[in-house]
Image (cartoon, rainbow, N blue to C red):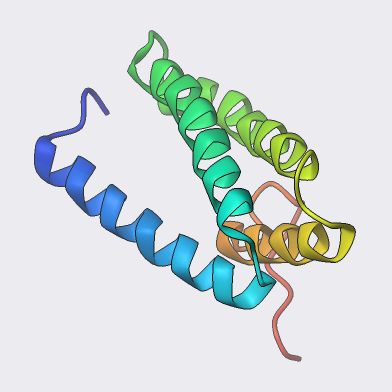
Length: 109
């Protein structure tokens, strides 16, 4: 994996901005909640980068990275309303595509 290039960082930043806009709309977030969401993302992302750039192969890093998701949700839980939190959880589950949930993502049958 190694370090991210400036282009990759810019791309990630752009994707995050789009996600915040979408989340603000979908969840009716306040500007303060968006600020807190950014801070939580930055905190967890910094940890994730340390893991990714650290020793070991992808296989050994996956469980740790999956654990980051739980940490991120715990951060979100501090400032989101219960209904907002539920939506964020659902959105994250969709993004993960059911990864690590034992089996295929739930599709329309």
